[in-house]
Length: 75
Image (tube, rainbow, N blue to C red; front, side, top):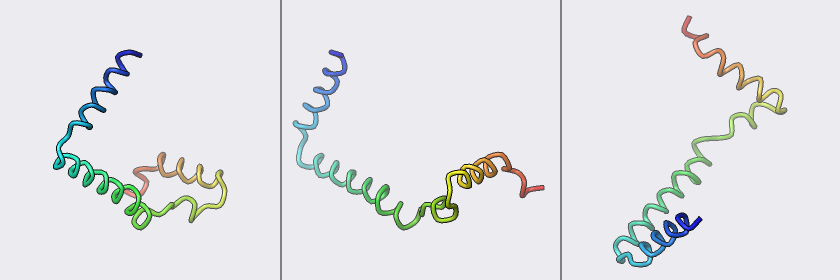
């Protein structure tokens, strides 16, 4: 447990001693990650299973069919 605490404090100390430029770069990285995972998911990756199937049984049957019939369309 002491090793984990030392690693944690190593990173905390490193972030505290950053320059303004590196803090701004981390802010830009966090904003980009938010855009990629939150906003793009809402608009470009709709929840296919919830919109096309009503029950959990239908959803699981569809997933099993897709996973087991990968090369069905190529024959």
